[in-house]
Length: 606
Image 1 (cartoon, rainbow, N blue to C red):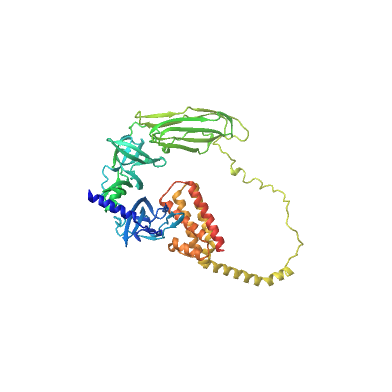
Image 2 (cartoon, helix red, strand yellow):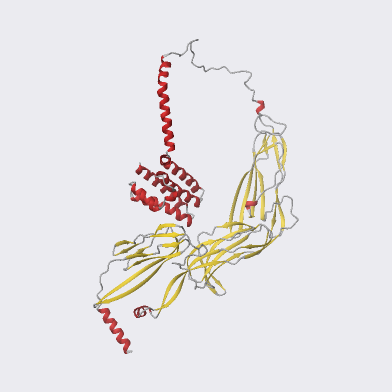
């Protein structure tokens, strides 16, 4: 007891006599200079004073987790003076997803109203020496960490016994007892012998579920509708997923000071990466019964049919519409109706087909509509036969049939020609091709008249033309040679066409933007920007990097703001291709910025 009192008294006296030396702000960054492709590594920003830290945005690397914040304190006593140093570290966990040399993003910290930036560093991502394994240097994967019972993934189906074509709802989930920091590299299985439709579940949400009395954090990764295409025992394969979870670890205090501040056992948070694989699921698929009705095309579900005409009485050469709508639950994409036998006196145009469907957790529901435009060419009373549609209902386990009524169409004599044979909407060409040949119209417009035997030979105009002909020919030859020289000068032609080609690629990007083809849009926008620099300065695309582009544009007196904007758009496009987010507003913004920056640089270079 006396020794403890003595220890605390000595420590208090030392703290009372501290002379804290003023320290300069030291903001450092630590990262490996070279990593292998696919490897994971740590990026740590450290500062020796308290401040407001603002982390970077990662575009060239995949963010797996972070920042993980830690604080350490050290003291030195030299010649009676005590120097205390506190260091705060912010650690990010990254994955090298692309090969090349990249600049690490810059972080900032605000200390006493002044902003400090981290030192810019570059990191080189090289090909992996062994593609089957990733480098252990800087990896956050802990081979000693056992994920059994802590985190796992599963696939769930609403049915394990179905008929061919009957929908199955597939739900893929992640379960974890610990906090889920990030989810990466989700890979779907191969849905062999299944037709797949996706269900939109929006943003990933965290829910709680209790399994066998234990609570889990659960994330629904994906929901799909599967339609088995053949009978027998089919297998839904495993999906794989990489996840980062945050776990609590314990360690002993390193020294007496740490023991005094935090106790003998220190708890701290650490990130662990796990690679997960779901179990396979077997599905028993039954063959449809053999008593298939005539016209059955394999559709399974529950449907109804509605047919109607907008007119039942009209005149010849007038048009009317026949609309057929099939609606219900099932694979709407496979809906087809049998060929309709229309009366031969009807001219029938190909139907306009429209489809509407919605994928929900109860399956696919929707409709398909066929609109026919019909023109009767002869008078009389005609019948459009009943239209039928057959399907298999898995609820009743039998074939069912939908049928429309017959339609009686009364056609009266109208104005114009009525044909006794198959109708035609236009007059036969053979009936009109000789019209006007036997009687010619009087020609009213005449050409300029001149005297008989008069001509311009040996006139002054003729003589002057002959004299100037050699000079005109020489001028044309020189002009042709000049054009050929320009065409042969590949560099010059590429320079002249640089802006034109960039605009052409951006026009294609705009079409992809309208069609919401995200991957192709970002790829085409990136090609437009890189192709512009390549053509403008006669460089191969393989020679282009962010550093080269910045150096070239700076050398050509392009202002630094425009240079940063140009390279920023390229990096955004590359990042978006590997970390997609279906945001049309962001795509539109990048497209507008690309057009603006090319025009701005073009004005500067001129």
